[in-house]
Image (cartoon, rainbow, N blue to C red; front, side):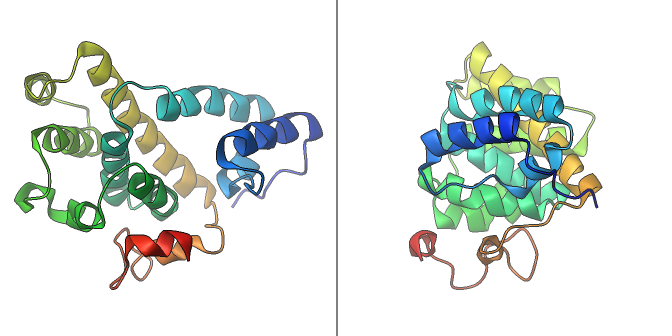
Length: 198
């Protein structure tokens, strides 16, 4: 495991300030950023790509969060899953949908656009990438060229996130285990959206 970087006043303080401007004054740097802080220029580059992908894309945020959660399941990325469950729920994804991700093809709670995005997650995570049929299905579901680029980038980037997390054995911060079922990328029994504020 690569340990968290020592405080890097210039970069980490700047990133923390930007994070607090977006998430509120109590926000703390996640463990992943603290580990990546060992290579400050790489952390800065990571954020320069990840934050616009998350916050400035035109495709619906909730749909991208479903895609990220499905990818986390396929990559067994518990850190990624635990951090993105609350983001997904805050973006309008339902607890029923999060629970159904294991068997999304057989679930009745996803519309055609969500199914196309989940197929994309499966194909990108399974490699080598999205098929022509998958990209055609995204277009048929009404996604613009710009949105399809965003979705492919999102699915691909979060596979990278999963691999970095696994390689560096990044520890999950206290409190996030409530989004895991016995350490797996599933919601625990009895989980409700009310748990976001508990």
